[in-house]
Amino acid sequence: MPRLSNLLLISAAVSLLTAAAPVSAQNVTFPMRDGARPDTTNGVPHVQIGVSPVPELSAEMLRQVAEFPGVVLGATRVSLPGAVGFQLTSDVQIAKPQAIVGGREFAHLHPDGSLHASLHPDTARAAIDAGWAVAHPWADQRAGWEGFVMIYTPINETELDVVLQLVRGSYTYITGEALPET
Image (tube, one colour):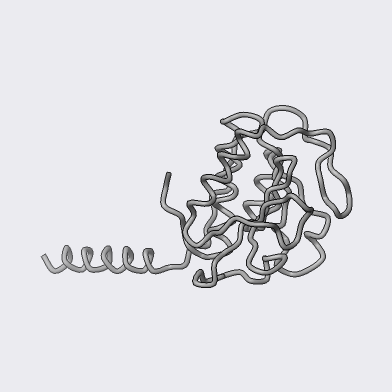
């Protein structure tokens, strides 16, 4: 019996440590995106070329992001006019301040439906490899920006699901807090 109680204690300790550990691991598996990658500019402003948004999908994305704890949608602080910034309120802790481009904005939605977001570098690499994103031209300019990407405009609900997974990953990476599953 002492051996069983030791195993139970170890199991309980592992559970407590796992629950208390900061969220840093990222889901780095994405389905391959269908179709060709959109062309983008090579500088700033970093935008897609010849891509139109699907207004209903952009609206749904904004609706869901507005439900993230401690997120306020508003005019971007770092992007083009018309872009919507995903701002963290002052009561939200920032675990990766070096990965934020400006203020408390962890991502923003462009008028063309694409987004810029700061992701865990492994997540960014997986998203790029699967055709969902491209590195921002400034991604190699400063420590902490290694995961700064443009996520392509979703053109259907299946793509929106993956894009929202990436935005949720950005929130988790920047804040260190996992969002509840939807």
